[in-house]
Amino acid sequence: MTRDELLAARTATWAADARGALAAIVDAFKPSARHLGDMLDWFDDIAARDGISPGVTLDDPELRRILAGGGSAPERLKRWKERLRRLRYPRLAAREQAIAAQLRAMDCGASVTIMAPPALEGGTATVTIRARSAAELATALERLRERIDRGDVERLFALLDEA
Amino acid sequence: MPARDATTTFVFVPEEILIERGCEDTAMVRRCRGRAPEVPVTVVDDPHFGRARARFGGDFAAAKRRLVFARRRGTFLEHCPAGTRGMACCNYLVLTFASNCPMDCRYCFLQEYLADNPALTAYVDPEAALAEVADLLDRHPERQFRIGTGELADSLALDPLTGLSLDLVPFFASRRNALLELKTKTDAVDDLVTMDPRERVVVSWSLAPDGAVAIAEHGTASVAARLAAMRRVVATGYKVGVHLDPLLEHAGWEEGYRDLVEAIARAVPATRLTWVSMGALRLSPALRTVMRARFPSTPLLAGEQVPGVDGKWRDFQPLRVRMYRTIRRYVTEALPTVPLYLCMETPDVWERVFGAPPAREQALGAMLAAR
Image (cartoon, rainbow over all chains, first blue to last red; front, side, top):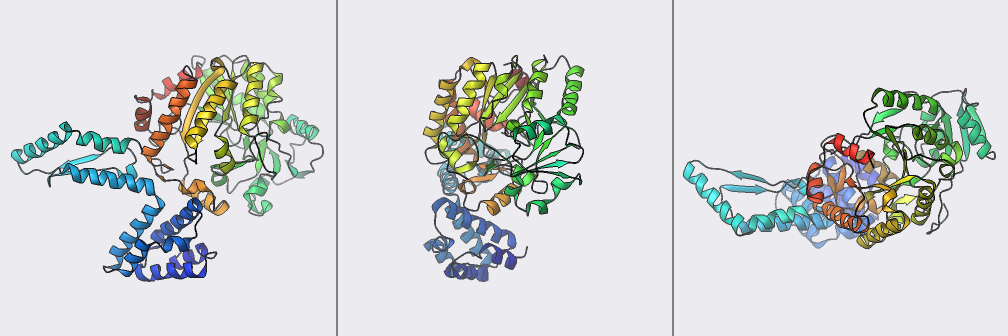
């Protein structure tokens, strides 16, 4: 199904102003059919959960601010879709934000990257250490060791464990 | 459909019975016609008539209102599909006596799995199925098998019409190395309670709190009716099982599941409860598409579900771990001696919930079969 066909099929029952608001999004960001499909699913899901029309969701101030703001279309589409995802998945998004905040607070340094699994599925964090020498590796490990000893890493895994 | 309340029982009277030519005089068809003499009957020549979506106007729900009797083309006995793609497995076999279901649970995978072949069909040749089972059991007398009939259909939904349990229970009652599981959301146990299962039959109920049933399980018996049926079969000598599957997160789910588990514990002595399973709501992408078309306002699609290793969408892992742990606590408090396991879940989640990875599949299956 093309983007236009998808749009016509999935918004036929929407109010005219909501269809117009979405048309402005499509015109500005030119999302692929896959991205558009995600967006339409999320509007429907929010409507089913909260009992509100897609027009109300589209009227979210943050979504409107991103649409009106600067930046390239792909970059704005990414931010716009992430905002919509937060509205669709509030608890998952909140947990992901809490994990991101914990990782920032841990301040493991530029040589260490810790990644949570996508959508927190699997519960396994991926730790990457980049080093050009034994000394750099030792420094990175020492830094990680300190964070483990002061409970930072335990708190991180607790966030991955149970909501 | 009439409004449901706590006393709603399961009743299914088809609008029409369609019989594949040549099956008119089978024992099952004769039994059904005797039990539902008022239902109009049509004999059909085309052996593939059940596949014609057009017969039901492309309407999946319409297919559930007509009952087809046909021969089964293909094997009856297969391995349960749960043990695939990274999921822990309990080594279970499924036996297919029917396809589709007169109930219409909003999350049911059959609405996608059977979309092109939706006819509600009872297979008229149970003796052929039981011959397959007998062959397997005789070839492996040292093994204990768990065999269920509730994969492509509810095990008891058609029983008031077909009387299939009158064939199954005596067969399994006479076998030493198999346990038959009849899995249902009905209270259709009138035939069951006329027989002695000799410890070889478990009747298990899929159960959810009333609030979740109202949202998701249309056409099923109420929880109270299911528990009443559970008491009846226990009094007749059956073992029973409970599947808290799918777990449905809804307003008040914690109290709902706590009250449900306590009600189960009041209804059944723990010594007669063979197992309790828990499983998350899991929806394939194709099923989500079908649900969105059939039930666009269902709250089931609005949960915080994400794709897992098997491609199915479940509540995101930390949320479902919380649900499993919470309900596990209720079960272990109310029914401390009853085995509890997870269905279609990853070893990682097993470990988080139980503190240990799942037993190897043979061991898990044997543990459940030995109860």
